[in-house]
Image (cartoon, rainbow, N blue to C red; front, side, top):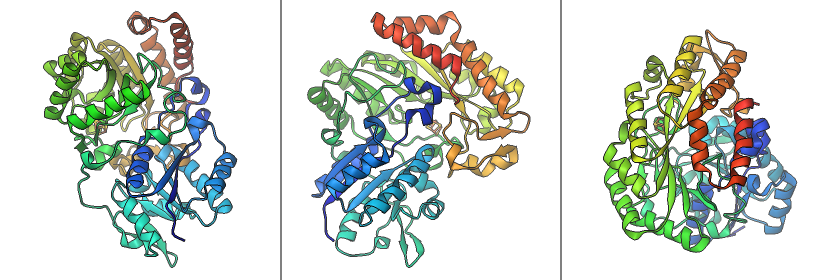
Length: 472
Ligand code: SF4
């Protein structure tokens, strides 16, 4: 059956499933990867639809109802490890209700463990390994012509009850050759999307990606373990920002790049263009502490950057080294100081329950987080995700519940030798209280919020966040 209809689905995940009692502070972001793939296949003559279940609050029944109306040949799902079980369940429901649809799955999880994922979820017909920008349109054309999926590089498919894995594609993706994301087919965009707690100065706001990958080699991170890095040119990024401003009135951006400062020359050009063009945009980003400098941060602030998030992970140097962070506590403090001098707010991302973690290293981390000058703080549980180096090392350092179901970063699945699960949860709550019940973070939040209604709502949400912690 030849057909150009494809439906991309972000699987349904109730916010409560991810954030527990903190669902009210949970963010719902547009599915950027699906938006781009939809735009790519549209350029090739396909008719894409996007169903974003978390944003629309859809049940499996709702999704099936929509699919029956559209009657697509292809259904494309995406999932990282925290959502893989929902993707598998949705695939099963789709296969039962719309058996003629070919179910595709992409994302970091299947890219990391393709065979295990295909064996675990027999309703997935074809998986993508790595970036699917080139392999997806090629696959659709191939299958539509009646040829086998196994002729397409970068896929895993089933043939005579065997799995055929054609391996990663070798070519570098030229981001500037790709179309703009298909925001125009995203129902409710931008108004139904929720920004993370205190992540935006003004609304509507949206996340975007200006580059892919990170030069870091952190053992727990998918980006650190899979080395492809690429960027859009400064001109392309400006065009994307202008499009979002003119078409959707968006002036606030969350740059979700793993490390926004990887491509220095391009970044400098982009910042100067933002300043010259006076686009009146504000934005926040993530960066490695060892890749920023004062001149860069000053220019970023001038170009509209008001917040920068640093991945710090721990306050113990031995653990930092073990994680492959390749940074020092001194570099962390310097990066925070430089951001503050530039007038940029700082957020530190930490984890608890590392390899070799003890009560002493936890205390050291909490002290460090409270005293290194950060304005804001997040702490999740260290999780050896499939396909990372950490997943291969976990048994050496403690007890690892290697079940995809529990790997959401908000509940501990790895318990270091000297600690218990209960201790990890209690210490995480203690860290939140110690950090936030101090004048500095409170003042920093107050400075951010000028509207009293937003301030009250924010205070309520922050109170819930601090008192309950991240875990369920
Ligand atoms: S610096 Fe951040 S994004 Fe880069 S590899 Fe390390 S954890 Fe991943």
